[in-house]
Length: 305
Image (cartoon, rainbow, N blue to C red; front, top):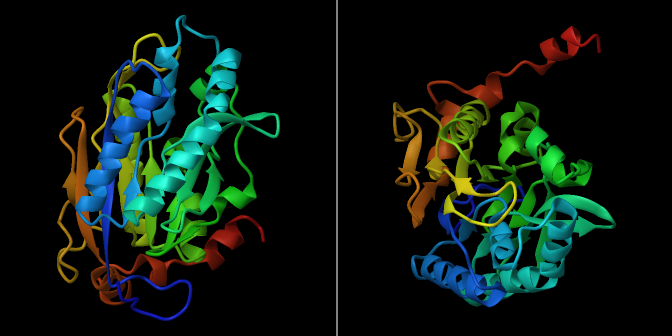
């Protein structure tokens, strides 16, 4: 990977990314879950994936191993008990397979507060935490999850440059993506979890809007299948994807802005090679140049600033 420009905000010349579309089902416990997850990450490593995104709430599958259906508070306690093992697994797999692992999300207590947390593990085994910022009415009602802080807006530093983490609903707020691009992000990682196609499409359409307005790449990864015995987490719907800006005239992107898309509701690994030179070319000489042509002075005037 050769950066196109010097400094921490460089866009890599090329980067291979992956999206893991994960099948939810009943498991016997953490060991079975970790064994299957480890195999998928190994496969990603074998395909040369440098950054792998996995779904939001992936570890809720662990609740299917409980003998009875748990209420929200008890479920959070049980998931929090798995937090040390989950973070250790992410760190170990990233280091072993020499990739950056955007580890979906995990419900856990953080300083006594219920959070929906994404840990990003880099190839040196280091972990960076980003909490979900925008909480859906469903999450607030069922899990009483609280939104993250300003620190969670910042892009994550990885060997493939700065990556903005947007957890599902977060992707539906344009100002977050703009702030992350202003801070140097060239790629958005969007772990998501939706039960119906309508919810999936909200995330997909929002993600595609973010690629156009920010001239970035986006990787989305969601859950599929059915996970019995887990409250507020049963059926799943996903069509994970690697998305690009829509500019086929100069940058050789697909006209529909979809580099790769998963078959709906089938467990699989998407792999795509992202061309940083094409992205830089689109930003500087594209059919439209959203980053160059935006006029924040007008928006400030509208706010009375």
